[in-house]
Image (cartoon, rainbow, N blue to C red):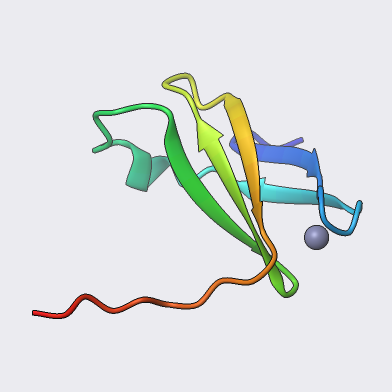
Length: 71
Ligand SMILES: [Zn+2]
């Protein structure tokens, strides 16, 4: 497995998925665990990474929509 790739079994459809740790984006993160949103097919997985980029927790969002801030 290439470095920076995470394997997990999708908790929704039970398929094996690989996803890449966005290391560049994580460089500026000061607080951990940090949620990384992984889109798999039509559902979303919220993968929490600790400061060693290890998977600390996973949440499932069957559907997600964009919310816009009102100024
Ligand atoms: Zn899935």
